[in-house]
Amino acid sequence: MSEIKLPQHKIDQLLEICDAHGNKPGELINILHKAQHLFGYLPAEVQRIVAQRLQIPVSKVYGVVTFYSFFSMTPQGEHPISVCMGTACYVRGAEKVLDEFKRVLNINVGETTPDGKYSLSSLRCVGACGLAPVVLIGEKVFGRVVPGDVEKILKEFE
Figure 1 (spheres, rainbow, N blue to C red):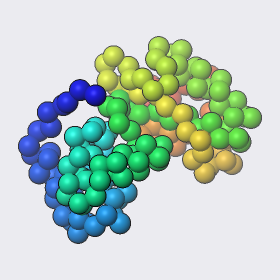
Figure 2: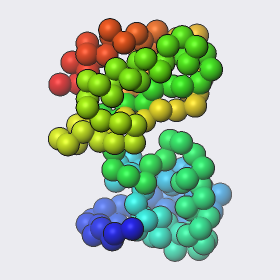
Figure 3: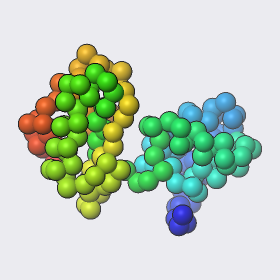
Figure 4: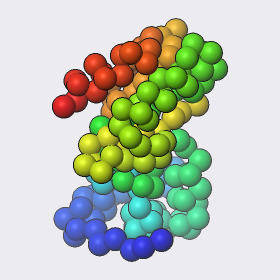
């Protein structure tokens, strides 16, 4: 994995986040959420800084980051798109919706558009089964999405 150079002011903000949570290992998930919001993702360097500050092994931080689907170790687009592939969404056509996002954006799951505007992922379940199929773009939830809605949805973010 290649090293990235984190700006010092962001490292300082990350340390402040850890301090605000008392540098307690029990606050790891909360700290990682805020760190991901700060950096847009959780590169190895961020994980190392958090581990040092909380005095826990980097492997523990890495284990949490890789276990939870809402954490990402790769840069996300300005508008991260997540298509729910849970059972209710899947049986109501989420796969066709995901295929349409891939077609329109010309990227695959796990990729980001060349302009950095969108990234595409799939999730197991977002807990909004009554709205299936569900798409999340950032914090915004779109329910009962059909492939024909994809271009209209993306226009909202232009």
